[in-house]
Structure formats: C-alpha cells, structure tokens
Amino acid sequence: MTTTTASWQQQRREDISLRKRDTSSVAMEKPLRIPPQMSIYADQHNILHLVQSMVSSLAVDQPDDPLAYLLLLLRDSSVHVPRVLLLGPPAAGKHTLAQKLCAHLRAVHVTLEALLEDQSETSKQARQYTFKQQEVPDELLVRLIQERLKQTDCFNQGWVLDGLPQTRLQARNLQQGGVIPKHVVILEAPEDVLMERHRGRLLDPLTGDVYHETFIRPTDGEVQQRLEPKVDATESQLMADLQRYRCEVTGISSAYSHILKTISSDQPPLDIYQQVLAFVRTQRCTRTPRVLLLGPPGSGKTHQAKLLTDKYKMVDIPESVTLQVLQERLSRVDCSSKGWILHHLPSEPQHAKHLQQSLNSPNRVFYLELTDDLCVERLTLRSTDPVTGLSFHAVTRPPPDPEVQDRLQSRTEDSPDNVTHTLGVYRTHTAGLQCVFPEGVHVDADQDPQCVFEALEKHLTIE
Image (cartoon, rainbow, N blue to C red; front, side):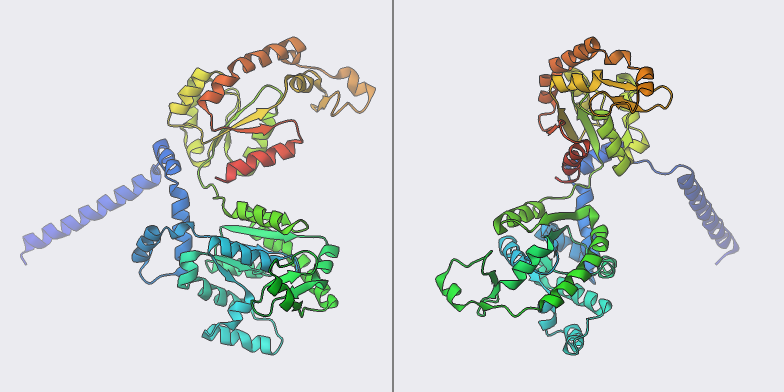
C-alpha cells in the first residue's frame, strides 16, 4: 500500500468519526419531536396496543427467532387471545367460573393442581414439596407457570389462570418473568357466605365438576345421582386460608390495579359470569387521551377535568386559551406526549367541526347531563369567603357560622339572570354539538362527583 493511499484512508476514517460526533451532538441538543400526525395514525390503527401486546408476548415466550415469532403472532392474530387471572378467597366460586369462562372463550384453564399433575421435570420437582406437605417455593412455582403458558395451546387459545398468584411476591415474580395478563378479576364475598358455600360443596366424580347443594345444582338427572360431598379442608383450615388471603389481597390488587376489576360473588352465578365475561371482552385503551368534556354550566366540567388530569397526568387546557390559539396549544410536545382535556371549548357547532377535522381531533368526547334547575341551583347558591378563599354552597356546604356568612361574596356571572342566559346559549347549540360528535358518551352529572369521575374513567381507559 502506498503512502498516499494510507494517508487518504486515515483522513477518511477521521472524517467519518467527526461526522458521527456531530450527528450525536445534534441529536442530544435537539431531541426528535414526534409530530401530531403520528399520534393520530397510532390511534386510528391501535399501534400502541399492538406493540405492547407483541412485546409482552416476546417477554413471556422468549422465542429463539423473534422475527419469525412476531410474523406468526401477527398472522394468527394471537395478540387478541385472552390472558386472565381469576382470583378470590377460598369458596368464592373461582373454579366453576373459570371452567365456564374457558368453555366460552375456548381458552386453557390453568390451575395449581393441573400444573402439579404435568409430567415435566419442573412439575416433578414441585411435587416433591407437596408430598412432604410443604408449599412450592415461589421461584419454582413461577417457572412452572411460565413453562405451561409457553405451550402451544396457551399460545394459540389464551389462558385463564385460576387462583394464582397467591401472594404479592408471586405476582411481582410473574410480572418480572413476563407473565402479563390482560385482565385480572378478583371475586369477593362476606365471610359468612364463604363458610356457607364451603359446607355444601358437591363433586361429580366422573368430570371433576364442583356443584353446591343450595347455590349450584346440575340440571342433568344422571349427574345429580352421582354427586357426592366434596372432601375439603376443615373449617379451621378454611379460616386460616381466608386469613392468609386477606393479608395478601391488597398487595396483589396493587400489582394489577390498572387491569383489575373486583366483582361480588354474593349474587346469582349467572350474574357473576356475565359481569366477568363483559369485562374480559373489553380492550384496554393505550392511546394518548385527547378528551373533550362538554356540558351546561354547573355540570361540574372543571372539577372532573381536574380529577382526570391529577390521575392521568394529561394537560388541562385552561380557559385563558382562546379559540384562535387552541390548535397551536394542542400541538405542543406536552399535549402530544401526555394527552389533553378540553372543557371550555368549543361552544358552537362550527368551532366543533374545525376541531374534529384538525390533526388534534379528540378521541374521547363526554356530555355531562344536568337539568337547568339543578344548574341554576348549583351556580347561584355558591359563594366564596374572601378571607380564607374557601367556597361554600347554601344547600350542599353552608358556611359554619354567621360571621363567615356575612362576608361571603358571589361572582357576578353567578347571578340568576347571567346563569339563565348562559344556559340558554348552551342549549341552543347542544343538538349541533352532538351532531358533530355523535359518538360522545352521555354521563349523568346529577350524582356524587366521585361516581361521575368513575363513569368518565371507565370509558376513558376501556375501548
């Protein structure tokens, strides 16, 4: 190699190195900003949910060839198969409910007993503990569950994990091991109900199905004839198991709070099943929230907006933002990344159409419904103490003493004439706004604010 050639190659390497440093520096100084168009596209095609499901499946199954695995996953639509945890105290009815749920969803029913009966090496190790009447160590139990959920039937059909995890530590280990459910159901019932159910359980020795002499009787006469009392734990053992469950359920609930629904099992079995099935069929919403909150003055829009922003950290668009600068505000990075909630605009159908047709169109629209009489009562009877800054209401929160009463002040806009006029303007445009956003959810605002919040939250987080 000549000296000239070597010198040229050295210079080229230095140029490449310099360009890399320059590029890195620019990237650090000016981080990439995702345009609003991408957020709209991701919402329309449910990209975030798709990516989340694929990453979760990769973590659970850990395939040798991730690319081929993802192609199979997309082709078979396996991202939509059920992955359910069904939990609850002993005698709450988990086993029977899980069987019925699996039959309907065509999912695999996974129980601790079935895991221990498997012929895998891990199952054999776990049985050594049960033979000695010892608990299976958490690490071994988690590995047992992981191996079972990786099998073809669970991968293709989905699964319902019945009665597991039993502790907060097990829940955390399962999450760290990639076992990520889509839905978690916790059944609850009073202690006396659980004891009564425990006493009357019956077993079909042919199928292993569990019935109850009072609550669940088989309709088939042949099945009724072969039922026999189920050999269960003694009542003292049941109480000990129940006490242990009570100590652990709070920790388990906190581990799955974002995908959890608690359902009372002290009701007819068909009602329980229908509630669980309806919940399992829902799809969690992973889109960036862009919320439009509409309603008459006095319906509680401002208060509900604050509750939602406090919990979900979205941007509360203040009333100082006018229609002229609204699009610019909604296009900023904080709104694109965190989402936003708008509750003072638009006030007219034409403005609503402009918002709907923009890149920042809302993906959740709510109508808070309240009668004019209640709106007037809420607004005209409220006042503020200028000394403490506290707000009072003549009916729902009267002042504590005459001294505070004497110094209360009301806003000019809360006078009966002004409130009546503002209500009239809103009612004039109500039908037009609902035509622009016909998919909006109507929520009764004549109830406790927390109940209103829960109704909004339900539609915000679930498709």
